[in-house]
Image (cartoon, rainbow, N blue to C red):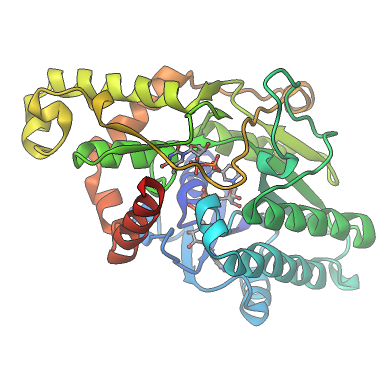
Length: 369
Ligand code: NAD
Ligand code: TYD
């Protein structure tokens, strides 16, 4: 693993991963390929060393471009993050999810097969790592054991169905052609650079602007939250020592009901504003800046159709085989995340485009009707 192609590296986890890897291993260089959809911005990649990081604005569905990059940069590793990733958007418009998540993954697999399995290249080490989600396993009953690598796939949203399809294609390329490939299925991530359409950054950004905090349904859905830096470390462990053909589940061992998580975050926002007068000046519309309680801005709104009730990961395999476990506890992870959003509005304000504001308003208005 010396020369990597990272797809979707201008998005949330991809950007954290590129930063993590370039920081942790001076031998590595990275080509980032990203289409810069609404969810990606080069701002997330600012300040990286130009000798070791090269950004390409392009589409993973562009077979010619992908093959040229593999060839021209002699890339030996692909870490594939690029995806349409938001469940609500997949319900509103599934087509783009099939295109990027299924056809895009196929395009990358095919380019890797052609480049790396050609007779002249056989024997050289290469690795395709496909980044996926725990959502492919479906929804858990309250007392059911967490998802393991042996859990049968049961995707229930267009997003998770498109990711499940991409996982199946990826494993087929290993079994059929011998492509050296690993897959990881991870639980919900949170941390810096996340687009504020996902729960945690949406709650933070709404709270800072004094907007209501929408909780879908009864707020009793459960997610298993992992700090993004831990996900990046887990992927690095799989890349270095994971066995080709294997899937590794990565999770936080950290299950929260949405409503409890939201209340925890609201308390943290109130405490942080109470301790820092400058925040009250910078975000005057926030309830916490006006002597109110952020919790009072929670609003129960219409549920997501087909909303999965609970996700949780059994991460025993990656712990056993690769000695990997998360390092961040939830309180410190969520505090670091809040601090990042408070200190780095240059990092997320550019994402709040007219498209974002339109989407947020439409999604919200439809739910409060
Ligand atoms: P994200 O939406 O923040 O970023 C996706 C990135 O992919 C963006 O930069 C976007 O511009 C890029 N992209 C989209 N279509 C593209 C295309 N056709 N060609 C090139 N680039 C394209 O997503 P994320 O949250 O960082 O998720 C990254 C990966 O991790 C996804 O595969 C997702 O399924 C998986 N995952 C995410 C989570 C999570 O909690 N966010 C959890 C488990 C797994
Ligand atoms: P999300 O961040 O969209 O991730 P995923 O759907 O992939 O788990 O949502 C996390 C949980 O939060 C999910 O149960 C839906 C819920 N949710 C809300 O209650 N309100 C919101 O505004 C959003 C975006 C999500």
